[in-house]
Image (cartoon, rainbow, N blue to C red; front, top):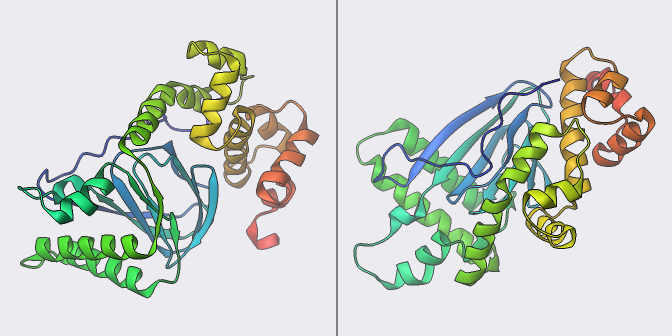
Length: 295
């Protein structure tokens, strides 16, 4: 049973509308509790998700973050991420920044010390930022300038982007990678794209680790180790995570019975499904079926 739209590639291309301007912004509303905001994917540009209304769950490199209005999510280059709406009225801005367009025509100290390491993902920032008035004010001003498009807005937008990066560099650096570490992560993410795609398309069927390893021409041990290194999850945990998220969507948005949903998402044992659902979601599937107003 197919229940979702066609899955996009896990490496998401980020084409900029203006190849000479480093920012594009999407207004992103959702009015469905449990809706998938975006499937597991990654990209090379840095992305900022600024939440205006409602709540959501954003998973980044296996860490789950509950976000609400006023929170900023920073998605570094190569961060593997996934999002689900936790509100019937959710609204956020997705701000994509191509920091390579901030390079100078001639190499200078700013470029060598800051822009190049950010562009190459050798500097990574904290993923969730809450209650930082400097960050929120900078993001709000950037969005306002971009949307109003008054004369000179391009200068203002770039200045706020520089200001935002300055704040992040001063307060929210969490990792420094050397170039070889970054290139290896990109290479491995690209190699595993077909595996993530296969799981998204076949989660309702039995998925065998040995079969996945054979697709990659790897030993079971090496495949499992590299998979966990990239996702933060074992193959079994990752598959169950996908299945439970699909089942939550069906519980909230269809009239299918719990047993039908369990079967449709790859669980033959409804009792195991219920235990696992409660482990992941901290609530029984029967509570989800009753709806948020009844909890």
